[in-house]
Amino acid sequence: MEDIPTTADKRIVEELSFGAKTAKRVGWEQFEFGVEAPHLVRVTNASYGCEKDDHSYLVGVEDRDGLLVPAECECPADKYNEEYDCKHKVALATIGGPVVLQAAVDYSTPTQDTEGIGSKTLAERVRADGGVIPKERREEAGGVIDDEREECDCSKLSGGFPCFDCYLAGEKELPD
Image (tube, rainbow, N blue to C red; front, side):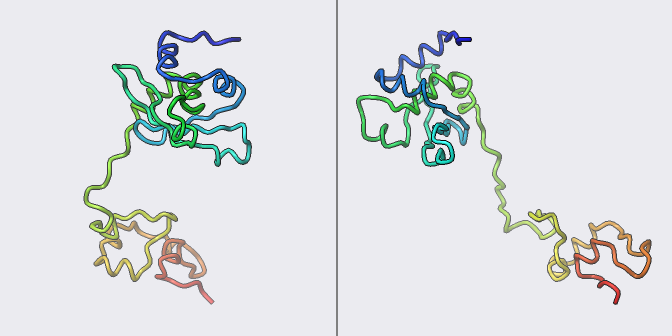
């Protein structure tokens, strides 16, 4: 089944300058697209298989009077050939099309922490490993973390074994 290009698809392609060889390569090769930042799409030539990461470039998306168009690519072909657009831009325009281009424009970065991690108390910091902050660090925080901690289950365990949280925190040792 063949895709029928929309008017928008045709207009995007008309904004680019490329030859028959580039058009054939875009048709033959496999491409992957990933929006990485506002107005930036990573175009990867997946035809290279396990070496595809070496054939991956960022393509900038530009709004030209309401028409989203691939504007620039970081690949050598686009940098050094001013006459024609590279296959990455052509692939983004023809295969990715308006949907991927619009996704790049609509992409928003997560809001940044304006205070910064350095200004947060130890109790507010997230542990990447999901673990418990060691006892020494809890003491540095002035016991704030201990106040937030729920009751442990040590008293419910038999044989004098500590609960997992107390053991990880170094508050209680395993029985001999």
